[in-house]
Length: 389
Image 1 (cartoon, rainbow, N blue to C red):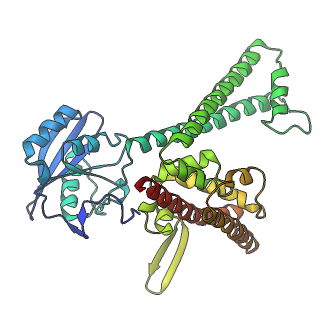
Image 2: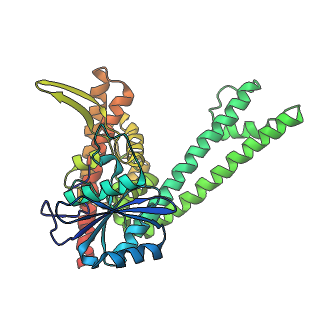
Image 3: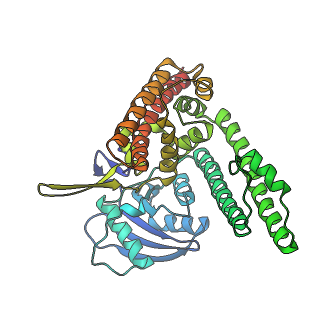
């Protein structure tokens, strides 16, 4: 779901009548297929294919007419937001639309670049497309940073699996009382040797690959820490850390993935954006509730659910949490404490009713995101007041 405050090409719920040409771009790595729908009811026409380059795009817009009368759209994807930013600098309005929310006919089984471009132009003119939020370049850079760390953590998990399965095949078991991947486990690995040179070489390479990944994670953590303190959104990042389970990396990830929290009019919109709201199938008087939709930001959903596991412990403000809440606004501290009490109670209640723990934690994660929205909105309001003063 895209919030009502997201970038939109509608004015007051109606399409702006000032646009004369609606342009759909089917963008690929090297080429762009162009479809054009003129204002009115005439069928869309196919312009052709141009190179995916700034110069070719500039020439195309120059041929199509006055920039104020053009409205362009293309699907969000691996090409990012470079095209939109170029068009905005040229004075051409452009929206990036959600691919999963583009209306499709069930019987339409033919898909080509030409048809996609024409379809985009027609739907843009009809106002049937859903725009996505386009982050500022600083926000996008922060998002790339936290996603690079996420990739490194996934690589670390794979490297650990390879090494552990290698040890299992060779019957190598750590001494009793040593937990996997602890400092004691690493000391045991450093002393481990294999009689055959080939096996020993494989073991050393697996261990070296794991060390390289650990080093990468540490470097990324250092940069994330710098950004958490130097970013323009630093007050929001600090405020979010008052929540249990939301340390620095998680707080930066929330801010990087959401951007401005106040663009969502309600916490439920943010929950839908993360794909944490339940499915529903209703027909007549019958209703079938389902699992979460998972149609949203998967990175945001992952960190929120991970943070929700910490609410299995009784409410308390001590240790790292105490250090994080020191000096925070009293209203922020009040929301964070309310979250601890409410979410711990909810998790216990759901588990007592027979819900699987993973399902209960997901439900807690959904509500945790609502508390994060409340705290972030408070911090953003204070930040705007400080900037205005």
